[in-house]
Image (cartoon, rainbow, N blue to C red; front, side, top):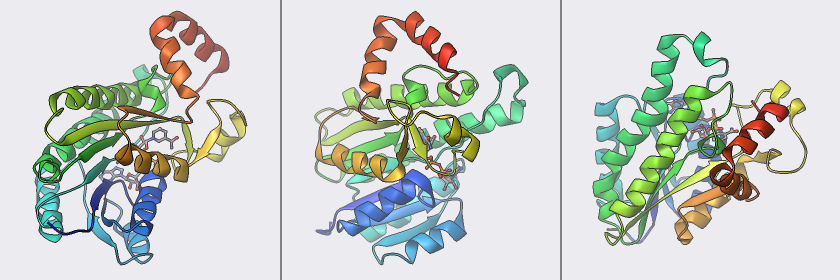
Length: 255
Ligand SMILES: NC(=O)c1ccc[n+]([C@@H]2O[C@H](COP(=O)([O-])OP(=O)(O)OC[C@H]3O[C@@H](n4cnc5c(N)ncnc54)[C@H](O)[C@@H]3O)[C@@H](O)[C@H]2O)c1
């Protein structure tokens, strides 16, 4: 084991994953930066010698296993933090979505996340107080109309996190997730941004705010990290009064 802490981030070439890679590298960590976008990874790796680019499709199981074997050789066989973050979205009514798109969303956002976590666990277990961290979404608080499959995959990520937080307790590895609301990344179109409020829980947040939450998650003990924190209230309401949350989302047309 080396003294330098290490993190493996999927979806690291842009948006939230990229901001997290930059933040952890700036703070002295070795960063395994994985993404299917090799060109984006190359520009990221040029920003720091602590960032190791790893071209990877999280839906390819053999490639995922090989990536952790290779990165583990660079860390001395351990991993302090995993940020399973790669994801894709798709908007539109569920009934109109092409079946191939439905499958792809599940294969990347849910099965891909499971594959990455499953392959990372031996390395995480070898590090003291390690963290298995995943990017879920506010759509895992209450499903978002027009993003039904995406919401279902993110509920899956949240459920997996909660189960692992129990299953891994006492093993030296913690589990947590990030539940970002609306973040200014490539996933957000200019039209989306123009239609969004400038304050409250549905305001647009920078990717750096989620990266900072990932840092806090490693140094904290919470299971769920809401960005912005006002989403915690939506989480309470969605359990206490789901019909009221449904009606408010319908009225606001948050899509
Ligand atoms: N932007 C938001 O408003 C928002 C809100 C909540 C949650 N999220 C989640 O945050 C995560 C990061 O998204 P983002 O907003 O930074 O978007 P982004 O599009 O900027 O980044 C996603 C990254 O994942 C990579 N990726 C996609 N499919 C992949 C695959 N099969 N294998 C490897 N890499 C793959 C992409 O190449 C890209 O670099 C996603 O899981 C997303 O669902 C985003």
